Length: 232
Picture 1 (cartoon, rainbow, N blue to C red):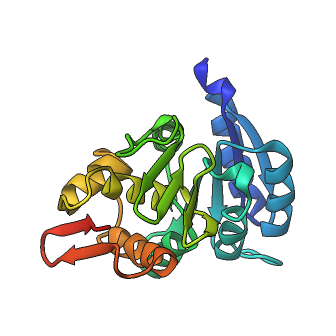
Picture 2: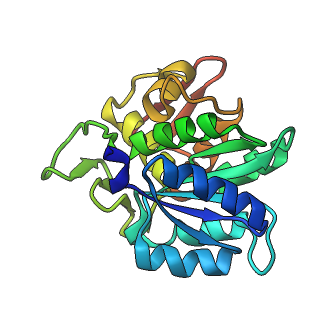
């Protein structure tokens, strides 16, 4: 099965949940690693470089939010997809997760077939790419004082380099692909998250806010009720 090439790291302090998730994903052909908290997860992730990490929010030693933030600081994991396990109605956890750099969330309890389907959809994102506007070489986007390294998910602005979480990077790449063009929220959802992925209403707003914190408020403009555009 093609899924055997993918590595999935499951992180949860409840053994029965780990066993349930592991069994169903291994049965579907995935290589599965498990950790009981964020500290263990970081060690395993650095060693194994999983394609997908599924994190519970509430865990001892290091919770999921903190673990996600630390995972996003590791350059070798820049293309790793991160999803949170959240209970129904935990909107605050979802918002906090996106702010920490998560790509999506999975609501529990979840049926086995739905779990495998969600994992398959999440892993498809590892092959997504965004077309640049100005190409210095095959992996570099350059516009004004902003340089984007597609290969390392790294940006440089005002001689300061930083690694961005995957979705922040893809959102920024989309906006700079056509400077001055207003991208509607629907276009952004479709291009960055995919038409079949359900995300919260505040997802784009959270990611835009995080980008502005990193590159400044002047580059990304909001058109109220319509969407966003990049200006040099």
